[in-house]
Image (cartoon, rainbow, N blue to C red; front, side, top):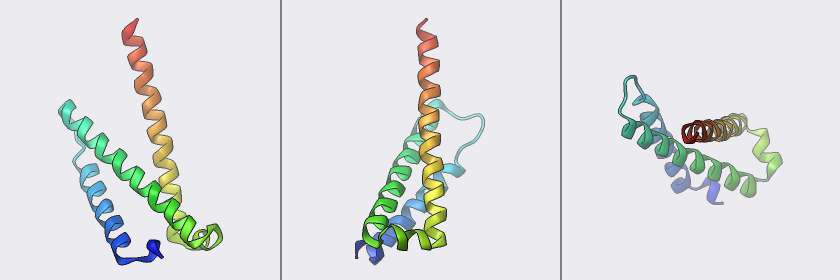
Length: 101
């Protein structure tokens, strides 16, 4: 099963490492270009984690996936990350709309 292969686990661990580093680089003050780069890295990592969750659900089945407490934690983090991305996107859109007026 792909979701239990060493390659899959290594890719996910490297993504966690990249995401941790990018989150640790956030500071004040920060250059706007750096903010954009860190946001893009965070979005990429989030989508990789969404993919991980989907692959695991398809590979293990929803019941087996849900019984593992780490998968439960991962699913909660992924859902919160998606909500944060949506809210952040809406906030930026509202700011842009107000700037156009």
